[in-house]
Amino acid sequence: MKIFVTGGTGYIGSHTVVELQREGFEVVIADNLCNSRAEALEGIRQITGVMPGFERLDLTDAGATRDFFARHGEVDAVIHFAALKAVGESVHKPLEYYSNNLNSLMNVLASMREFGVRHLVFSSSCTVYGQAERLPVTESTPRREAESPYGNTKMMSEDILRDFARVEGEMNVIALRYFNPIGAHPSSLIGELPTGVPNNLIPYLTQTAAGIRPELSVFGDDYDTPDGSAVRDYIDVVDLAKAHVVAIRRLLEGRNRQNFEFFNIGTGRGLSVLEIIRAFERATGVKVNFRVTPRRAGDIEKVWADTTLANHELGWKAVVPIEETLLNAWNWQKHLMQ
Ligand code: NAD
Ligand code: UDP
Image (tube, rainbow, N blue to C red; front, side, top):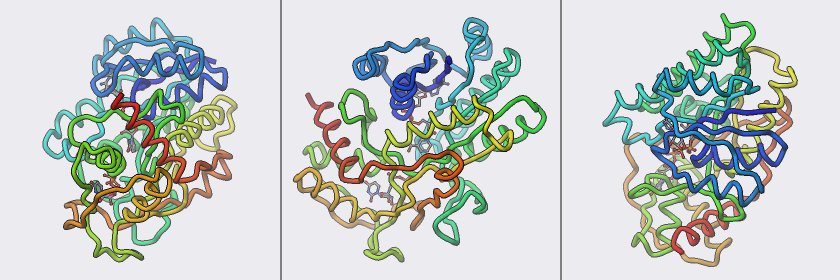
């Protein structure tokens, strides 16, 4: 079985390609390398013993995307990771975000229709829930108006996919709503590439532990949570990668119940920023210099997933303990500094 992975040299994509190849799938990646490096391919080869197919391609280019499908039209399914993902940047560059994330999706869908590729797994996000009134969030928790253009591209993409699957009866789509993906492959051969000053907690934390940043700011300790710091559901990137493999199998084996399905992909457990810092220190033996600062604008207080649907329907469950995930993140940080 041959799978086309867009954004496959990126953070989550590269880990997913590893899991696909380990399960015997043939992979061909398309990525324009706007937020990743071709070296990820070598990391994938070293882990799995197989070099995935790769083409440098901008999916906003409809003609180039179509040519790609014309050359690889026999693919069995697509996993669409390619997107711009920096929430803060999206507020300042809304057109770039709408244009990149929506046009690339529509070009992929148009080519899938033309070349008869019927199965798609899409990267969505728990951002579609915003601050839910009741926790944990289930798939029937209502979506809320997006806080950023990035979040809005995920809402709009889900809507496009639902409408597309409704009229294209042969098309089957699974959207995975990721909670907070963190960590790196235990081999330290692939992981998240830092670009400038990190916005996300874990890369900021590991850079602080490594002495690259003087201190980590804990954004707020006055939330309505047990220790006052904000709570998220941190999902190990390898666990997350495996969710894509089971979603692909569900589609290929025709076990999906509807043309358009979506699943929460998290651990089902919320951890606070302070709990993460303590878990990191326990796992690595390295102290993290931190200071509590005011809340970050736009942050929600707490969110974690109800993963019952993914557990039962996909037969998938997160298994990597948080300490192991944080140790892998730390080893990846050390690898980057070699
Ligand atoms: P990433 O930036 O590491 O990977 C995305 C890849 O897509 C990059 O390699 C980039 O070069 C490529 N890309 C972007 N636009 C492209 C285009 N027009 N043509 C070809 N390639 C293009 O990000 P990631 O963290 O691996 O995220 C993967 C997906 O998961 C994205 O859709 C993201 O929005 C979604 N997601 C990520 C998170 C997270 O916290 N990392 C959370 C929820 C959802
Ligand atoms: N956070 C923090 N300090 C940082 C970065 C993040 O305290 O330097 C907090 C942030 O306020 C949120 C959590 O860590 O509560 C996760 O933030 P991240 O940006 O990683 O993901 P988000 O949930 O915002 O998508």
